[in-house]
Amino acid sequence: MKQFACGDVVPSCGRTFTAPADDDILTAVAGHAREDHGLAEVPAGLVDQVRAAIRTV
Image (cartoon, rainbow, N blue to C red; front, side, top):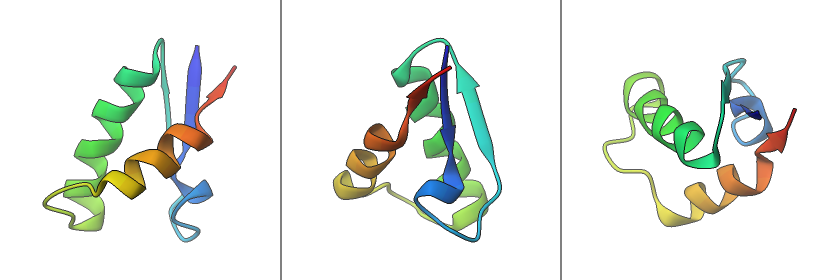
């Protein structure tokens, strides 16, 4: 199982995500970025930061 804490990239955010694979985490985080952080598009650099912060649990 994989886990990502948005606060690892956006310090003021307490949202966490758990899913079986990195791609599932990235899909969920993209929706969260749009809905909660107002990002119409997720920049490639941010995707790289998210990928680097995904942990196996």
